[in-house]
Image (cartoon, rainbow over the protein chains, first blue to last red):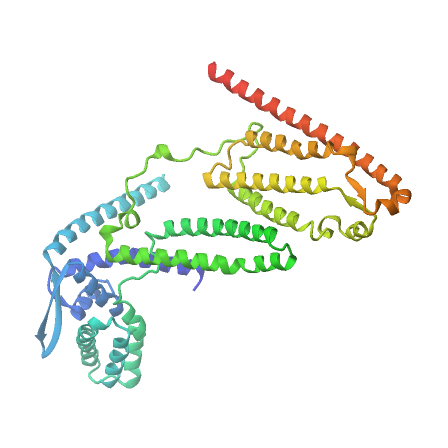
Length: 118
Length: 345
């Protein structure tokens, strides 16, 4: 991996980190266990490694943003997660923040493109 | 699936022990569901090779387990700036104090090359133990800050206890546009000052450090220095030590960039004392004969010539030092007058 590729990879991971949390919180407004959550996100175009997603669920639960319960489904015990009350409030704030950032970036890019065209 | 069991067992070994079973049960449920999906897609069980590829893609057991640990730092980003600042200060001042200690020990006990060399050899050990101590203290602070975040607000988050007005002024250029003395320059002055002092303290015991091969000639010559030269030597040592102390204080106070007129004038005035002391020696006898009764006839004339040359040299040096002192006093007075006049306008 060249220095540029390495730099890009680091920046990409940094950019993804916060977005993944937001995506997981968004998806967990509906109850999921780890594997179905991963599949649901992948179906929407957001692939996440097992070794990233499952520990992330634990961390978000430890922070009080998720609640979980063990339940049997298809003859197998699974741990189901969903957004907690705090999680819902913080998700709404984060979503607002993300939308503002997204809008600002789009505006900046649009301005640059129109300036280049002129 | 036996391979999956082995994989999960390997992951378990590296997990936080109090949550091992819970995490493995969850991971097993997720991976088994994934395996079922894969096998349903293929319409057959995975081959050994396919199962290995799948587990390899998930990741090495130690790396998968590591993700379940909280992020741990010996010294985290919140504490690191304070740690780095203190570490640099500690290493610098320990070096200075250690060098003072070595210089004093050598001067007081037995000045020798071996003692000086041993003192220098001990420097890396002293620095390493200083750095290790500071690191341990800050690792403990980091540990406490992580465990009890509310009790360590100063390190955990920036506080509002500072005022922009208390920030140090921007370095001013000198009167003639010279750059202000840098910190590195001020440090170098102190370090080389110590080295010079150390060297100078060794000179009486190892005259060749000053005279080179001529030391052997002086040693075997019929001449010797008068006792006043020893007094002169200790005056020079004292003046250098004073100047060095002054520079160390400047560094400690952070005032190494400030003007040093008072310091220069004081040192020049004090520097006149040993010169005057030498000039006032009775009969101007700085060099005498070791055995006057034996050598007077043969070397008496040479001794007088040497003392006469020393007298001329000393008189010249003394006059130069007085002129330099007057010049410095005059320049300082003029600068003060200009400043006062500018302030009154």
